[in-house]
Length: 193
Image 1 (cartoon, helix red, strand yellow):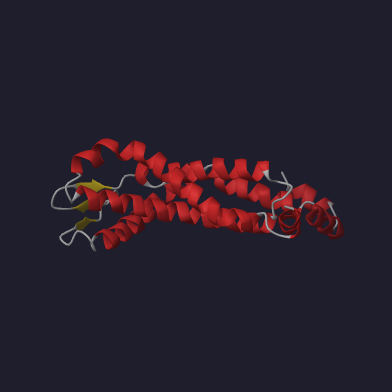
Image 2 (cartoon, helix red, strand yellow; image 1 turned 60 degrees about the vertical axis):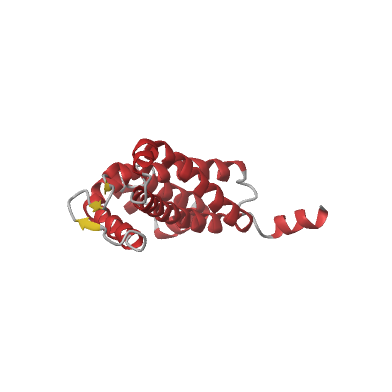
């Protein structure tokens, strides 16, 4: 569908279009690659699930010495008091979706003050932070579950996810927000107040 358009426009016209609409093109690519994160994680689950399971096992083993690892499609961490199976619902997709919504809201509210390049960098770093936070969340379940809190973990692990991801987002935003909106306008605001 885009083939005739690409062929019919001269190269100079494409350069002008790229120069004028570069920020919109970057925003479009971000939306394209992040609008359906659950499908992306679902297709990568066989590899990502193993990476997540091995990472959580390495962290949790520092606190639970006799922790076993079973490398199934949904990896299982077997401890003395609680076995934790990491299923695709534990992939952190809820955290990524929450991050997308809250980051988009923050970007929309501060669009005029936002340094677009810094915001894009913070966006991708934030996605990584949410995935790392998810690994820490699962590690805490394994460790606490094998140190006397197995019943509490099994009862509250689903609702605790939203609370945990919200806290991770707020901590991340508090660390990056001033840098994302920093620059001439932020310096002028600080001088006038």
